[in-house]
Image 1 (cartoon, rainbow, N blue to C red):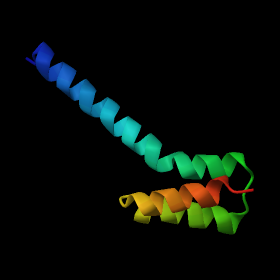
Image 2 (image 1 turned 180 degrees about the vertical axis):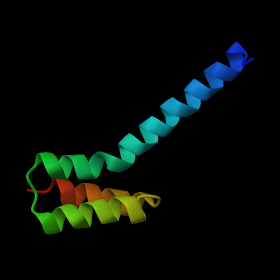
Image 3 (image 1 turned 90 degrees about the horizontal axis):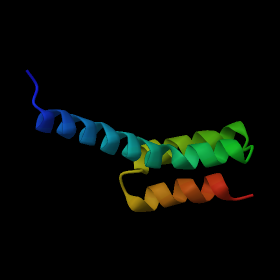
Image 4 (image 1 turned 90 degrees about the vertical axis):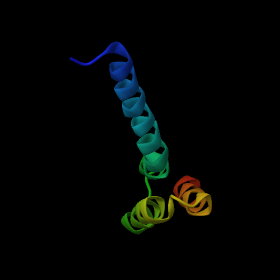
Length: 68
């Protein structure tokens, strides 16, 4: 049987993972909302997923996704 502390720990990991995935996907979502073309969307998604681990790559994807 799972104890309450184990359940709380599992919920905490699920929430932390959801927040992390939301932050990584934010540049692609912003690019989608600002009606970017297919090439810009590809650049933003690729930059966010491949280089998102470095803060510079994530900011680059965010910049490309948000620019008009």
